Image (cartoon, rainbow, N blue to C red):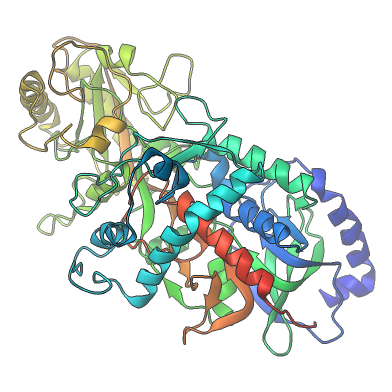
Length: 580
């Protein structure tokens, strides 16, 4: 690096860096690099200086920079990819805001103790205790959940008031476990960007557009194609800046008078980290391709404490797109179709297909100790022409897609026997990544029996095996189905006795991971002794979530991110900083 500066390459990189604000070229997700920390010499030169250097341009980065600017600080946003928005740009951008102002105006009560009981019941089910002062949560978990309740609404209101993120209220959207007695406000916590379409599937694009527009109006530069590769400390150990590389490998250094804030997403696309930390066979995910766990790598040498590394915001995904690392892939928020069921490689139905996506993803990990296998590692979604005609959609990661859209994952057959042969061929094609799994020799026979049993349940409206359609969240994500007047269960209808039939191979994946360096309620990254690493802050999926295994509701990622961006920017603004 010093050689680069002496040779004059530093000056050239500075010129290129100043031109990056309008860069739009795409960057392929790089393989994991060796990322390190460098102690700066007292006379260290920086290319530019800001109060805050924010890494990442998704919701966490944009919100943190905006909140910091509104506190009177200068800020810059560095984005590794060639375009802004990260995973946020792919999201529907529901954001879960407890006790929000719209709820209050509608007369929906959301008492804090009941909110905390609900999140504790889901995040730590084995330790939940309604009589305990913290309901069984650790002190850190409890304080982090309190912070969400206290700050999500003020943060959302400030973003709306400033024109960065106007919203509309979704009073009828239920929490994912709204039936639990602990959930005293089962509906009303969800907000979406005001400009989102009625289905709300484009909310992320709207949010990135409005927030980035406001950032630029307020003088916050957003530099794309800038991968942060080093965290710079002064001799006293305080973080004072970062080193980044542009798309051509040129190096720039930015000083942060007060704070470096990381909001760079999780480690979904880092295979090594996934295998070492996640608690099941994950085939990739829907996060931005640039989410490779860079902050985990960089924060480690500083002594950052890691937390919640074994969990992710999970969802089922199509096998083909996962293997291809398709950057456009969306998680299956909604398993579409009523004349549709899932079977495993034995042709047996083993799950409620409409189970909420995070919970459905966990069921792929069941281990058969006697056979030494994951019998549900790959599931087969099967549907008929009726669902194809009435439930096709290109939104929310649905497998049943309209004609003319990307349907490479779809397997077709005019009869069940023909479909079974095509399914076996598809398994064979991907044998190298699914442990050589193939449909059993009695797959077709079992599939026919599974359909017959399912059809009986569909006619009666009662799924006696898995209770499909009996919970509010299953109706929320049911998708479009053909209207059948008088039927009791809108999630089920008998599959046709005649073809054509369709199928798709489904595996478990992530929306993004939810573990990383532990922070306090003000976003300060903590070391192994729970002491803040001076000058270093983190927000979003690059740091540890106090949610544990739970996915509390739609928007339970983005609502807390907004809350902690607000708290982090406020704390960093008050940080006295240090001379380089």
